[in-house]
Image (cartoon, rainbow, N blue to C red; front, side, top):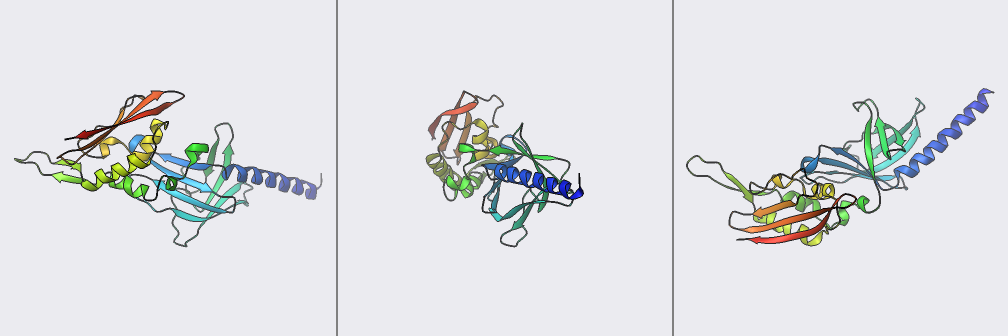
Length: 251
């Protein structure tokens, strides 16, 4: 076989791989999870067919959405590379770097990334359908409200006792906006924890999320003079999913 024919075969194979990877990449969104439960952070990437992308860090405080351009190229090493450029020119990147070797694990439907900036191969899970909804679709200001849930008021203890971290008025108002605007029904336990975080991070009036997948998640927003308690109930289906959100006034 001549070198020219072999080269053409390699080029055709690379083009086919590039087209397949492009199709996978622009379907739904891709998430890198760090940590677990309410303390987890989630790096969320959406790649559009027009060559633009957005990335967002989901955590317990407000972070900016980064927008930019992406492209797939075959590197000199013969491997597929995902290259990112920051649209606003501030060189802001979250977890994915500017140049990453990329492949798709079909069996597990995961993106496999590697390169000098990573500690071995790293994986991003695929979210499609309902789970792939962009967080900005919940409502404008949701991420700001999520951060406000943890704004606290400190009640100073007497006689050398321990101070009490209570919810601030702003936290109570943010909780009202979230629970009245965001539908939690049928969401999985992990989705709820990703949205709201672990109850223990709210104030001293809360307890950590239990490990039992069907145990309720209880979020207490108490200023020390009263407030509201939200109890999220789960039922085991294909996974533990929300069946009811109970709201109780605290006097």
